[in-house]
Amino acid sequence: MNKIMLISAFGTIIGSTSNLALAASNNLTLSDLSDSLTIGVTQKHTSSNQAKNFAKLSHLKRLSSADASTFSAMAEESSTIQLKCQPTLQTNTAYPLAGASTGGSDCFHFEITNRSKAYAFVLGQNENTDVTLSLVRHNADDTLTFMGTSANNGNLNEMVSALTQPGHYYWLLQYEQADGSEFNFGVITSETIDSFESNDTVAASTQLPDQQNKFSANLDHMLDVDHYAFEAKRGQELLLKLDDLSNSGAFVLEHFESGTWSEVPSKGKSITPTEAGEFHVVRVSPNPNLETIPANQYMLTFGSTVKSVSSININGENNVLRLPYSAMNDPYLTTQAYQKLNISFTLNDSTGHPVPGANAVFRLWRDYYNRTSENDERTFLSSDSEGKINKQLDIGRCSYGDYEVEHIERSLGYVNRWKSNFNIGAWQLVVPTSLGQATGVGGPNVEIVSLGHICKQRLVSSTKS
View (cartoon, rainbow, N blue to C red):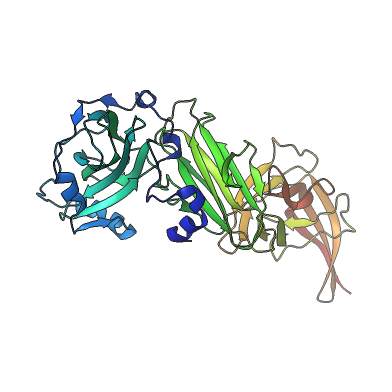
């Protein structure tokens, strides 16, 4: 889904601006950001035309993905660009500004020295002040690029977030209404950013692929809000869950439904779409009651739920000389192997379609009569792009087993008597589905599958039949 389609699908929560103020910023005051900012010298409206002329430049362009991909290379070019606006102000500083009038504008310059996430803001407007905020990059080739604009109604806070490479940037402040009263503006930067940025608005949501997605990320600042979108292409049931990897309590997971954001409980939730092709958007935001520590990470599971397992085939080597039921039936050794277990199966969603990216656990017990959660050996498996899992598991060779039986094999006109030495183990296949439920092989009715781990086999006699 492209961004235009996403904007169309969620127009009621995106609004008309090209970069919404972050949800976390709407009720912010300067004191909320005191840990991130110092207070700079008060700036005054200059009543000059530099900002007006700046916005009218013919080579001012909007940010595209192609522009973003070239920023890093451009930042390394030597360039002697002439700044469009003065003065140069500091990052991570809040600047009071007074004297603005309706219809006027200002621009100020700042520099980014390291790749960062930048949050440009306007806070503390009174009821007679309405500022439109734009963040602009001055490229190394002397062109200008709009990184985003925030134009909330009335005196709501304005916020533009963007990934910024080293270089020169400007605040562009345009006064839809102003009475000269003081407000604050500035930019906060953070260098601790994950690979999904920038996804601070619904329009910029990270669009996840058609699979079961499970990944870790972080919030780099109290202003950071991570958005993710998923399309239920077949109307399949979805799984949504956040695991707090640091047990910090610092994350809030919300799902947009029925026109509003709804907090998801810690156990997660199942989502049943009403139709195929339905889009769902979630966001992860900081807990406002706790400090945001960028080193803390969350793990998000969002995508198709596994509802069934098919084409299950778990066997030993093709050349295994099996112990028959007549020789060993308590328990009967359903699976028998010398050293290798060949595991294959397919994971399916609620419509029967394969689910890539989903997980399963293969549990192995060496002792059939001593099966506990402490002595099982677990192998973690993930489905491929076709929803399939194929794994050859090496369980090792055993030198001598606790059990021994004689049994008959009939082959090529001969009756062969064998003595087999073996151990008895067990296995179980567990496939997590939704909210603590699981499917697979082994459960309440038939808990496990028995395994004969064959150590030695000796031919005792062979007679022609």
